[in-house]
Length: 80
Image (cartoon, rainbow, N blue to C red; front, side, top):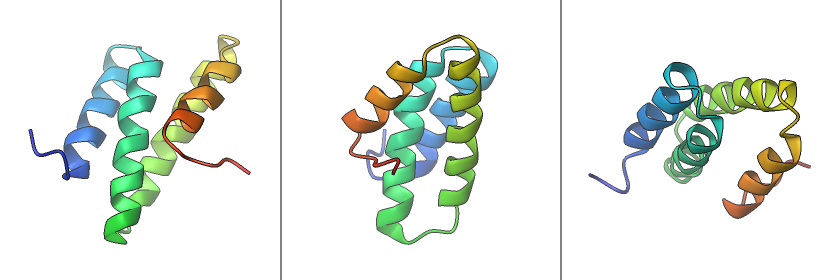
């Protein structure tokens, strides 16, 4: 696996979140993709942002907002 390719993490994140319903694993991978897109100054970061928002909605529905914020913090993503 190419650890510097955001598409790998985006794909894994989408698979976990959308198809398997594992929002924590999906979010972890999507955060990595998002950071890599930012480093590359890629406009695809907005796709990752949309998926992160989707995952937030799902995690909020199930009362897991705290874990959502923890995962973002673990990945050095500031939500403020």
